[in-house]
Length: 294
Image (tube, rainbow, N blue to C red):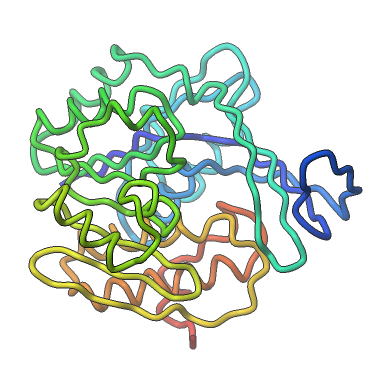
């Protein structure tokens, strides 16, 4: 079984601020750093650090070689990454003194996928392989359709939630990985139990993992619902928390682990990530997760 992550590759410009800015406000930053990131890149690196062979398909701009390099350095197979003219995708991230963040996203090369490129990559994969997607690239609907037609297990992290996902046939998703905000947008309710009930009604064949921040996470599927508490750590930067959780959950699933153990492992990995600065650089390796006393 092979894992293909067809996802974004971003440069993250991270600004340390006293508080998240409001409309019309000007505020001096306490510092600025540049990190490789993007939900696609982060999740591929999380998978690789968790011990999974993952192939990343994505597009970078003229200044994006650093993104390919960091993927390679962390064990991600980059044979399907292509460079195109123009700018790479990037984000402007504010991180406040409580380690909360807000993110402004520019799509750049991440929004330049073509059907021909997707077809070329997907031709290398087959039924039973995993296709991981987020919503920071274009043509997600096409990727879902083609992956499903091939018999791949389609995994969707519907982030960021926007109208572009309206064209996606969600009934072809095997596994949803979403946070409470995304869950509320899909299900029309903020109550976690009601979110899961709505997901079960709309997509009865899909497994769902709902992350709830400091309240932990919940898995629903295969006739069961499993809850996991969050690990308590001093948060420094929450930017890659969800992506780390996603990568480690999929890794546990591929290793055939029981759901409670998978949730515990993913929670530990996510906790370690938020205790460090940056997105991709904050993601821990499996040996760190196993050794952590949390």
